[in-house]
Image 1: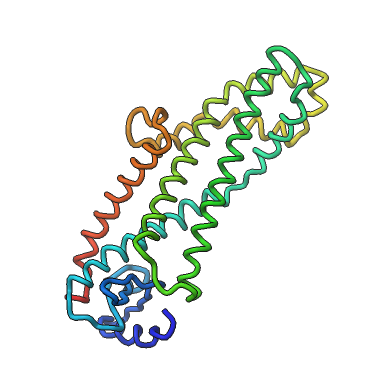
Image 2: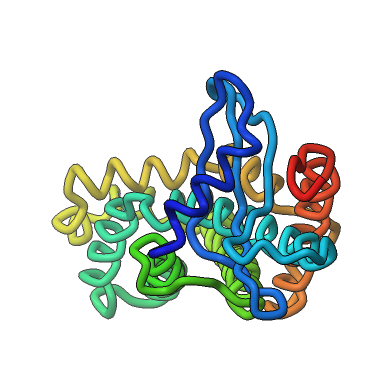
Length: 273
């Protein structure tokens, strides 16, 4: 917001009601060369209204309303990413890393069916860890770029930034769905491996207490995994969708939900009236 902030505060105060506080979202959206900002008003913790303001004070209401559409889309998408993608990016992956180390130590040390079983479990855990790394990188890239709006090194966001945020939402949901599905479909393999490892004196040497604990967690997580997969299942046959179609479905549904928020928020706009 830079040099405009004090001026923006004065604009925002014009539409503030008694006992309210307000915040101005960082970063402007430009329409026809004018900077527009989104203001949120609250009474206590409850949202009470919004305003679209500009230090340039243009007269064309259409410019304000075009800015409103992009400002609220950006706010909604970035909020979803900070909450949901941030949660996923910060999940403790220790259990997967420990089990991965256990499986690495067993590779090529057995034979026949046991070897195949170990390779299947190793593929599952490796894939889940690789996907987690991809998710973390995408989330951190988003955070680093969006942080520029907060520290003032970037004064406004563009339509491309909004589209990019929506694309990351699609990526995160695809990765999460794939991770959950991989783990769910491998439960029987892990159960069989754990049972065989406990009986095999050679393999017992690699089966420490932490590995036992995490393998038991994997085996007993079927109901929880099934429930989480259900939350991310928006239509039949999602597991058969290629990545691009999966992402397009998620993005379309996200846009529909944000469109509902836009419609509801329009009634709360104080300026332009």
